[in-house]
Length: 274
Image (cartoon, rainbow, N blue to C red):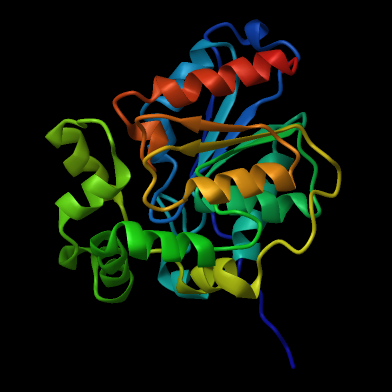
């Protein structure tokens, strides 16, 4: 049997240098990997300007079929392994190992890549754990059944059938201004059905990172998607100290109090000599 791999599409890649490139010195670049239904845009709002201002080269890219990347015409055929290969292609363009910062599904993409690839470190933000989506799916159905139903509708019959207020309440703890909330809603999209199945059972990471890497595991106290229990288990698995950010929900990088998530990451990077 001949198995055809999905072609390598052109990816949207945003590389931002500090105003004075010399400031970056020997610091590793920061590569941001977005979660399901999103794109590079979610990092460009706050995290990219913040960390670039702090002297880091930042890379925010959209996985195939997301944002301005190609691949949307065959999105449901795309696998978790394809996303890991997208990350690999981005990293191959850099001149040194990077810190990989993955949010939600993006954290799973990072873990999948690290089965075979190198990195300077990883930060998992509200990330799916190594065991997949089962625990978080049950948590969402119990904690916010309206959100679980809305996500299901978005996947099967289209975003127009999900109440924006339901999505808003599931993603944010802070009072995000209506204009911004509507802009985010308009940018959200369907996710690959194949990837959801891969993250549920078919292709969860089978091995820890090929080489041990410094790891920060961060969760949000009011997260309707990723429960505290998953954050703690993931931290134990990677032998990392967990950080649970109070007064935050799942979309940590887009909250009004986004600095409460960004500052601990910066502190951890500095503390670890990066």
